Image (cartoon, rainbow, N blue to C red; front, side, top):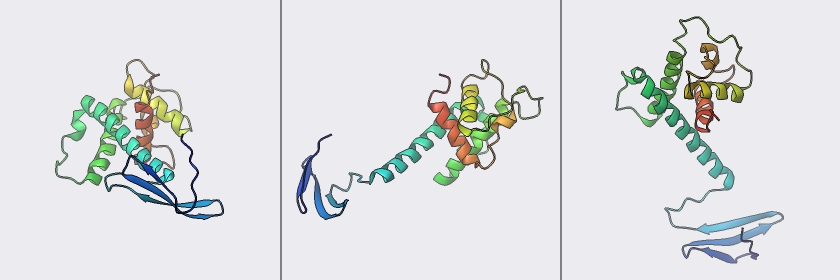
Length: 171
């Protein structure tokens, strides 16, 4: 990391087209002015992390969704192709849940897992992700494992499973 000292109204130039100016210094806070091309995103770190965390979750859900609809294409058969982005995202969550229930035998078969799902959401999502990756060589899970834990929305639950799945849950 390059560390530079600047006083009020002094600037730093980055890549010939980004100028950062010290606008104000008040106690332990520094106000910056940033001039950058419109196509260069500029965010505070906490906003950047929130944006990229959300994009990462969406991408993870898409990976899990694609893996499951390859195995269970019937969960997408009645979908309309002219839906909004928000509806498509909701459809992906519904498709993932439908495919997980199909993978578990639809809840109609007797429970194959004598284990009670763990209370911890991450541990449970990891177990589901391992099972989704390799259902034949991992402990079979029943619908109790697939249903969202108490206090967790279906969207959050699918996102948690998807992150465990894309993070290499089989390792």
